[in-house]
Image 1 (cartoon, one colour):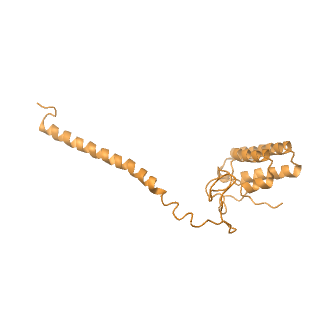
Image 2 (tube, one colour):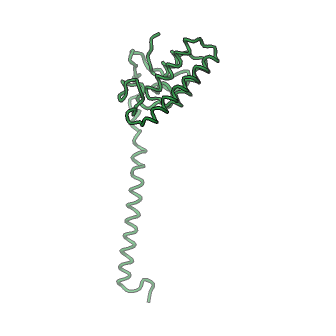
Length: 184
């Protein structure tokens, strides 16, 4: 008697082998096709670039951030801003409280307010340590709070503002970096 056994067992073994082969090929195609699509997805993305320069709202050509070595067309501002941050009016809040405020519990709201007040105190202390006058300290505190109210995460905003104070930047610079227009 040979290894496969009866003719019926050989037929079953043959069908099982074919099924295993087909499932293997199907699995291979299933996992490689999306990769191939993803690899070719960005090929046409840069088509036509370089022929004309993009222009900003004032009609000036976008030259990129030459100081930081960024190419033209890269977003301006902190790297942690979401895509489209600088484009258009933000929806979902009206400059009073961050997005999702209505969904937060009273404890979460109280914690947020406490974090903002503590952050303002840290900003004031850092600005005073750098020799800023009372008016500039108040403006830096206002910048910190307004950025938080526009949806910035308190720890990240605090870090940004404290870093700006450490570098000797004014409140107007902080507002500008975060896309807030203010007139003093």
